[in-house]
Image (tube, rainbow, N blue to C red; front, side, top):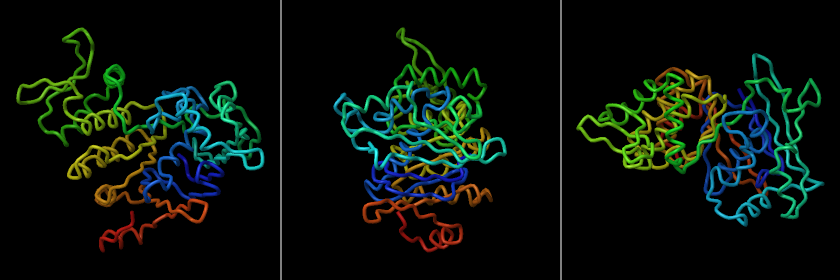
Length: 331
């Protein structure tokens, strides 16, 4: 599990430290303060460390959480985060793996010219990794179950990817777990299957009223719920990065959403970094962990602009309880 994070010269993060991370970490802050960029920084340094269920995540970084339709968009993305020889990008991670504490870091000195951005995308030239106290090490030296991120985008997957996700639920014997969680949010669901009535396999939802509908016809919010729950249920990763978790989901379903996230995180030992703009989302997450007596697993982190830097403020348990009781605005 990641226990802390330190960023230098990554987009707006000139020198930012998050000294404590817990099982589920909710990241909030104003518009364009760097919430999504924080998730991208973790992928930048860890996305290609070992062969995971999301290989090459760093090379796909421009399009994981943001629209990026052209090569020009990709160049502009990389140009926006590039460091210099004098001020290289650095992301430092402290993690507990197999009951051992690792201080892991990655850095990259980058040329400012956009043409050189391709250097970052080459899987044969990964970010240089080093750890203390073992010294310099190659990505192959990391423990097999190191914290390799599994990103969850706001945008829904393609139909073929959803079918693949369903197949992994079946083979991993996790279909019933996900079905039960989805039924708490939409009680009309009877079953989930992948069928090909018109020759192309898609995920279908069988409703108790007799209708059988493609997953996409239940709306963006429900589609994202399926992908989120299924992904958390079958992931081999120990770290989930979830951007704008509330996107497309009605506020009344948020408590049950977080109940599912908490249960799956506990079942699969998955740590989560989650961004949000929603006050209802913050309240629902807090209540879920408070009611379960697991507030020690929940962390609220607020990002704030601080001159030319971004500061991370941890809202401790005592203050968080006061904020919730008084209904203070902290977004």
